[in-house]
Image (cartoon, rainbow, N blue to C red):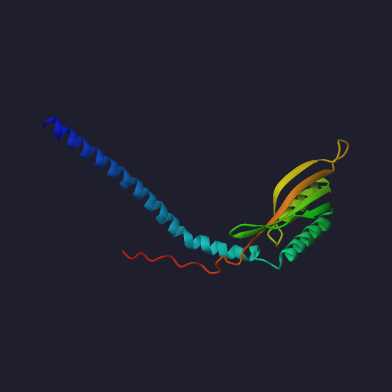
Length: 169
């Protein structure tokens, strides 16, 4: 071999190694996409099961009023004193976010029941931000500040399970 032949062989070998690495990476990406595609029908079914909890129940004002009513009812049944303040709804591409700021005061057991009631509500509310402290040093009464949220799917979200794409190979 001459020096020129060696340079050409090195270049070809380097190109082949680069191609091998790219092929290996593309095979990994393909397997990841195939695995994700296999899970899609199950995810879609679970989404459709959850959808009734995240559907719009009325106008923005009706959604906020319903949340306030539910929070108030939970507070009454758990004997928690509350003060609420609603925020304007926030929207993104898929959801409208309804937020209620809640100041609550109660003994530990009542507070725990109140928090559990919020998280188990039929309106699918959740506590997004939470701070808790003692009312004062001489008592076991707690004061809590929290942000209660509800996500509502916008109307453009599909209502049926998508059909998997057929492999034509």
